Length: 289
Image 1 (cartoon, one colour):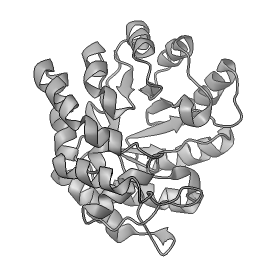
Image 2: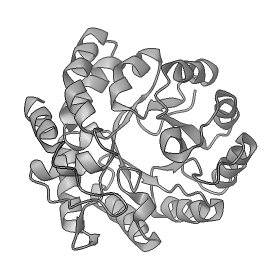
Image 3: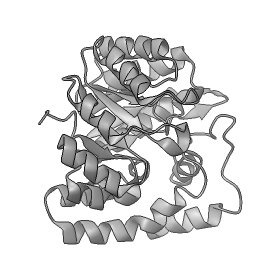
Image 4: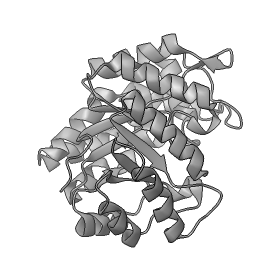
């Protein structure tokens, strides 16, 4: 089994904006809060970080800044996914040279390539970088799934470290874990405990943006085999998890951070601020958690 980039919780960190520009001062506050909680890893410029609406300069600036600021206190994983293999390769090579501990590469979206195309996409990048890669399957957003058979073939590459599985299919996750060993992180906060019970290495989490210590407690209880505690914490956190996905991510989590005193700003268009109808639910769930 390959040594994982991280075991435990990686926060899929939001990107704060002020007056339309990336706000590095608030980004530092977010990094400080995560480091104070003892987070295992951070994902910068992923889906929650609105990587798809960042310019290349903004994306690489955030990645470089996080690597320098964290300075080895936790793992930094750079979101470098694209539906253009050459662009993903360019981002990946630059982030790798900057010192990222790993790369998170979502499946190419919109193009809807074949499984052979997926293999060629990931292997092209894996052959050209020095840091390990996490493939990212989130078919609800991309229209493209990574099959179990493709996971098996990807797992044979020494530089592909695992998959962030966010399809919501526990049976599929179990098949991947059976065929590939510890090759998987949960990509869904509502499945942390059950997927770790099956053998997952942890979670790449939205929840931990606002409740990092609680997410760590849940995840590490599960990893340590204390399923009773993990199950209880998973159930207790479900109202907040549900509220954080009452609208498309990262709309609710950015509003939640605002409520918690972090001026992260609204998401970029075409995403819009949280609706007034869902604000009381989110505020109540934050309070209870």
